[in-house]
Image (cartoon, rainbow, N blue to C red; front, side, top):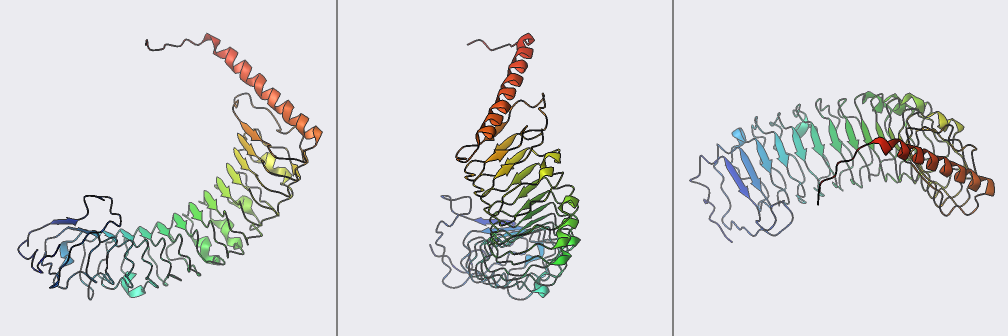
Length: 393
């Protein structure tokens, strides 16, 4: 479908313009064939929202004035830059250029100081971000660079309001530097990063650090344990990671620690942890005896740790233990759990495909299961005095 270049020329008071496919309202890659053979003019000075799926031009037309623009969404577009030269866009808060595979620069946004969210996911041609384009983004809270496969690093910049930074699957991203002390969530899963900088300690508000599948990550800085607010540390699939920083116990708020498919041999004892995943770690032979002093541990995943030989005594809070496929496991502590809490009846312990498990270990598992059954029976008896009211059929 072809349009004249002046198709919007007489809409000077237009405030909302949205072009999308009715077959795909969720902004997927469905073809939208709008042609402007003579160019495109957008003299829309009052426009607040510009949403255009698969915008066909290399940039927003020169005659467009973003002075009143609040929301700019051009996903799956052909743009190479937003617009020519820096244009004052003081009201612009939301920018979505996701999956614009020809985008090479943010040039033009240097005078948009109030952007809150910037979505550049899937902009595969974007190689770098320039300081001059971003240094004035003092209100930027959310920056999504997921899948920007040409991006190698970030500029030396201080985004004072940034809380969420997503670098997931930036497969050529090699060097990370802190660009905001206010970060609360940092996603670097699937990147080519080899190590974290020591000044990671400055992220005192960081709650979530996701570094899953960082295949080249070899070490973590000792300063990592200074992240006092950290609650989730996800290192699954970091196959070259051999050591965890000393004094891991200083991570006093850490609740979720995923170390599956790593090469870490010495497991830290972190008293606050609730979920600990160590599965598919063939370097792991033993667990720390102090694990029974983790008063909040509820979920322990050890499946397919093929060289694990012994399971020590476990804390009474544990609800799920999975050691399936631990083909070298021979012994377990006696008693398996240091005490049997009467208030915690439901739990799941899985020992399937542990072919070398000794008879004494099997007997201890049976004892534990019997005690659990007795607790369940007692609980059911206590429920006999409870009245139930069921709806009539």
